[in-house]
Length: 329
Ligand SMILES: O=C(O)CCC(=O)C(=O)O
Ligand SMILES: [Fe+2]
Image 1 (cartoon, rainbow, N blue to C red):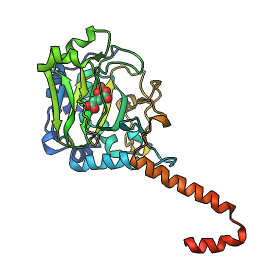
Image 2: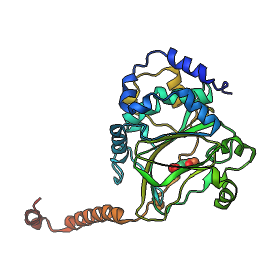
Image 3: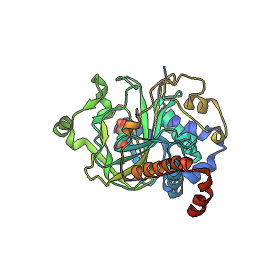
Image 4: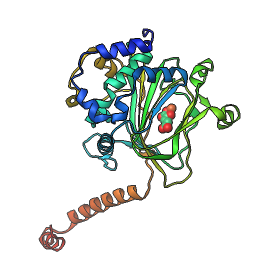
């Protein structure tokens, strides 16, 4: 059982007394000047009262650009021996962001993230799931809560951090203010569009914000990404969930090069030596890879290469030098 969340005064005290973080300079590089002056006690208060905290342009443009580059380098690489992501119909996911992005590692283990997590969840908290994801038009996300395991509804206190990697003018994150206070009374986590429109339309907060903006919310709160019909629409974001159940999580794959110090808090947060049995979200197969123009081109090049190699292998040996000369190889 996690200890009780701290009061705003205790958080300020703990932050002040925390040993000088060897990585403080990373924090300065990660966050904008406006965001660096955010008071963690205030964030925790807002999470308690409204269920969310939002800050436009919290991450510097360089931070966001590095994370985007790290997360998309292998986006269309098939059978390349590097960490890569998956397509799940109208979304792209790179789950193993901690294996490829030092910048993201610095953010996820920053004094800010640890301070908010500790202030809200108590002294035991663990990274449960994370992902860089792109959402394309036509994807429909139902109103839901995130206090669930990979299979069922669960009573596990937790928070989610989402930051935008693209400007979000549409398809934004939406949250029913205050819903974290009552949704736990219900034994389910999905809600229909009609139920929300009829009962909570005036409590729905919409977060249209620029690239680099951050939202944190209580996993008990009802939320969704607003659906967008336009097929050309793209929203890029990073999501990670931290909760107070430290014996369960999705497998967390970290590049050891990024781990500059491994104190007990970081070790618990990353789940060293603890079970990681949750199924990775989303569950994909080759069938969930859409055959769009880009993928047709990737597959087309692959097929051309393999078929011409196979054809060349059948050419009589005496003719091969001439053919090589003709194709310049
Ligand atoms: O991307 C969003 O706006 C919401 C994401 C979300 O709710 C989820 O992945 O559970
Ligand atoms: Fe969610």
